[in-house]
Image 1 (cartoon, helix red, strand yellow):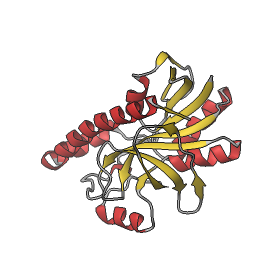
Image 2: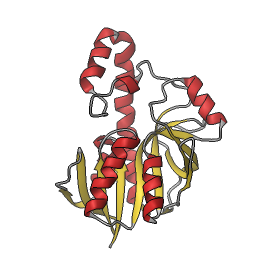
Image 3: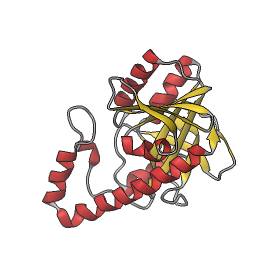
Image 4: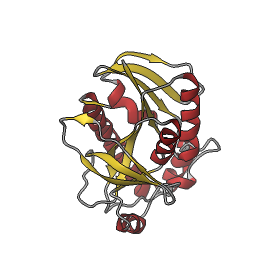
Length: 232
């Protein structure tokens, strides 16, 4: 049975995938979240350790110290840079860029519809429409924070690399909060800091948090449905 390591940022990004798996079990790894399961004739190792390159690299180190998968996949949510991408739409990267390197990405075997194109990995949450427009002008269609770390390790380990994301926010939307400064000492988004920021400006922030929560559920479901019908 082929083994695929799925690397996400947040456990919630893996909800729709694991819900469809059989033989799900918790892995006793030194990570925020680690599970294994079987789906579509493949063994999946699903880990989430927080946003950004550093935490994704820690997740990869822990997983690859314990397993030798047949492929690596960066999965989770992304922000749209292409104005035609819709919330919940599945985006499969053909290329991942981080500003200094570019990595080719393989395409999974599926009969489901998806969008594709270049994706850019940044070191921070892209919060403004202006920055989205600037990044999109460079040719990327979507943005997130971990895929380049996974792609780099896949190249180093000579493993196939995939990047499958579901759209969380539109190209025309910015965020009220600067989520990059709302991370805790461990590098993860601090719920306590986000709550304090929300209480300081409830009429502005509460609708945004509710919208993101609702869209997260939509994106996780779409991602799970797509991955349930594809092979890496």
